[in-house]
Length: 181
Image (cartoon, rainbow, N blue to C red):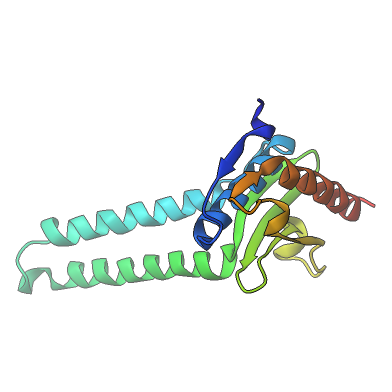
């Protein structure tokens, strides 16, 4: 049994587990075709977090007694708050629901966004052209598809990832045709 035929069983009433397994398969499907993931945003988040931790350690151990160390302590706290605000901004406004960013590979540079609509049971995948999404006047090229999770799970919770992968391959081909007409 190869990787695409691997079957997993979950409780389909656990929405978090359902979305997680669907996201993992979407991610694997995209990375099989475009293996160059862009880690730039993640690297900045790690850098901001590391600097925040160093400021916290310095503020706790390195500034000295309170009245004399007021200015460095205020600087550490203010810097920490600014960095945490930057992390929150990145997560809320830049990343949104994107689970994957593909670095330019074979001329493609795009992001993958997913949503699981709990009320209708639909799983939505959207491919967004990264070049048009940030800093240009053109609206980004988008391709979206939405399917019911009953296409990927049976009543006992058995997951069929090969069906999702076929839908992803079809969606990526349509997206590339839209980006490169």
